[in-house]
Image (cartoon, rainbow, N blue to C red; front, side):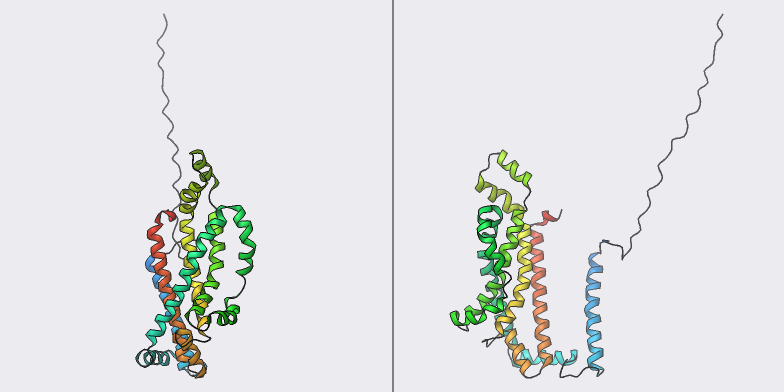
Length: 285
């Protein structure tokens, strides 16, 4: 008679738990570690405060002659005189008008040409050598010719900014459009799109954020060209004020004019960034 055999079940071994993932501690100076919005503003403002403090230390402390560098207090006094006695707000308005006028004229012509160069290789082969050659020419070198052709009025100043901006925009837009993803182009062809549809519905929408960023960068360069344009044959503008102040050795007004240009440029840059983020917020996702 077979004996009953009892089966003893061994207890299951405890499951091996995975070791806990190491907790990554945030460090302010770690490479590529992001900075919060508040910290970014505080750090950016701290540099300006430090800069003014060093400037005040050397000028108010007598280490630098006022003839060569005015103190912050003197600069503020000269700024007040510029606005109350010399109608400096008119000079600011004229300079802003010249920058925007020359830049918009350059963008209207350069963006379509850049898109054509980036989309069509024969157009690129035809235009790129000339555009690459011209973008290395300093805009100030054209001033004598522009004075002969257009006089010393507003047209000459707009053309200086136009020449300094247009070739940069053309080439940068062409590079942006030409860098489109080939798989998207092939997919559009597969879906029956023609060449015009590829440009209108694939290349331009894909390159739009890059084109907007290009315009933002070149607008900053346009501010450097306007001062060159206003140094010669101008009776208004921030550059004209700086030239007159240099003849009088008034470094307070010179410094204030430079600061105003920087502030206006900074504001325009923030506005451009905000518009780009609103229009092309999906590009940063």
